[in-house]
Each structure stands twice: as C-alpha cells, then as structure tokens.
Length: 304
Image: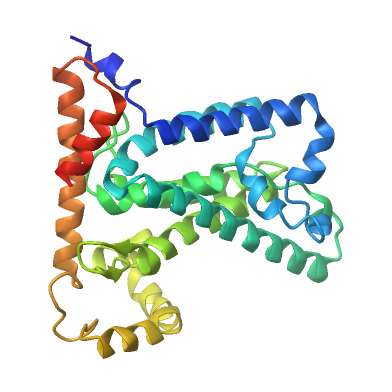
C-alpha cells in the first residue's frame, strides 16, 4: 500500500507527462543552441514573417527555474483538471490559451513601442508556459472554488487573483517584469474568457459557464464588485450578445427563466461533480496501491 505522501507525486496523466517532456526538451534546445531563441520565442519585431512563434513561444522556458516550476505546476494542475475536462478538451484549452495569450502580448508590445518609441518592446524575447499555467489556475477556480489549498489554507477561487496581485506588486521591484507580467495577465483573462463563453458542455449542448459565481467581478474583492460589474457587463454584451440571440432562436434562454443546464444551478452541480471527482481520486490514491494510469483516468471520468 502506497503512502499518501508518495501518491501525491504519482498517477500523473500521460498527456501532462508528454507536455512536460516538451517543456524540458524546449529548454534543453535553447540552452545548448541559443540561436533557436530567435526562431522560437516571441520577438515582436520578427513575428512577421516568423508567425509560428505565437505558438512555439509558450512551450519552452528560458531559465532552469522556469522549466522546473512549469513542469511541476502542469503535472499537479493537470492531475485535477484533465479527468474532469477530458484529454481532448484539456489539450484544446492549452493550445488556444497559449496562442491567444501571446497574440495579445504581441499586440501590446507593438502598441507600447508606438506610444513610447522604445525599441526594447520590439526586441524583447517573450517565452514561457506561465500564461497557460495562469489559465489553468482559472480552471481550478471554476471546478473547486471552495477547496482549500494545502499548506496555505486559501480557497482555490482566490488563487488567480492572488497570483496577479503578487505579480503586479513584484513588478515594481524587478527589472524584467515586462517579460512575464503581460503573459500572466493575458493568460488569466484568456483562460477565463474561454471557460466563460467558449468551452462546450456536452451535458447541456451549450457553451461556457454563465453562473454568477464565475463572473469577471469574482476576481476582485467584494467592495470593488459594484464598480467592476457595470464595466464587465459592457464587454459581456459585446462578446455574447449575438450568441444569446442564437441560443434563443434554438429554444434556449440566457436571461429570464433559463432552461435546465443554462443557469447557475447547473454550473454549481458541475463544480460539485468536479469536487467529488477530485475527492474520490485523492481517496483512491490514499487507500489503494497505484494502478495503471489509464484506469485511474477512466475512473475519474466515469465519476463525472
């Protein structure tokens, strides 16, 4: 019988192990062949014609500390999220959040150059998996918002907000904050945007999570929400006004009296299933010897 401490560091999914290997290989490549950074990292002045770096820039780290942190974070968060979402959806989330994050970083860097005329924004290499990790942290907020994180005893729903706050605060005391802060902010926002409006829910045939518990204002303290909600509602109408009309044309309503599956109750039930799947998985790891990884993933998916 395996000990609880040992089981925490086992039973990682095959997909997460594969992605972790990609991060390690990417770091080794740029470490031994530094010239590859020019072709793989996002360097705004060279993105045209090297457009592929909008994708490749997220899958390698420039420092050994970065790759260790990214690998460990990916393995643990993927262990929670992939059984609930499914491997295909998990991979889709990572790809889209990574691409959209670095696309926003590229646009921001170009805008800052034209505003300040500082060439550092054009030639600074942007790279790292931390934008995707920020998005995955939003996924943790969604499925187990009231679960307390081990050691720090902070509810999971506050983790993205704390991460952004600490990153912004530390940026005043570091010289290279421009290399990571935009990626973290856009990664968090793109992760929320995808989960809020785009993620397909097979059980309801609808998209996104319309619950009030996952609104944009929930990233902020209670006293700021009356200010944030009116601003967020403007962007909400811009982003999903057309989709709301389409849903109504097909017999769904997103306002008034919603159908089962399109209201906050369904979102709450889904989070309960995610929390239950997590608890059952952790209980299994504590009580039984390690089994085949595919069997563990199948059990978690069946419980959802």
